[in-house]
Length: 111
Picture 1 (cartoon, rainbow, N blue to C red):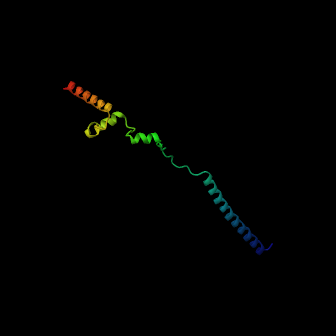
Picture 2: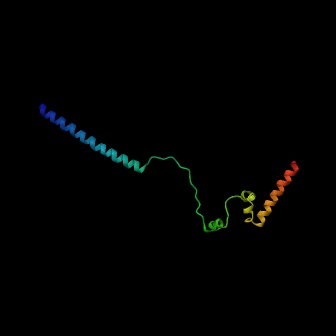
Picture 3: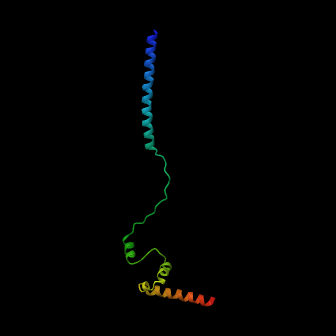
């Protein structure tokens, strides 16, 4: 084998390795994308959001003035607002009067 033939053989050998490297680079990119699609990177876990879809009964109660607020809090809200007391029922007015009597009774014991 002459030097020219040996140089030509080495050049073809190097060129074939470059082509193999380029093909393997493409395969590597393909497999990387496939892997990322199958096993996506885990994200930060978000806090769960619990929702409630109102039923017809819930909508009717809301239209009639019902709320999730406890009765004592609701009555305390309207206690100082005399114009809204007229919308409170008999039992609610009795409860407010009893609360006022308790407060007056506690105030008189302290003084």
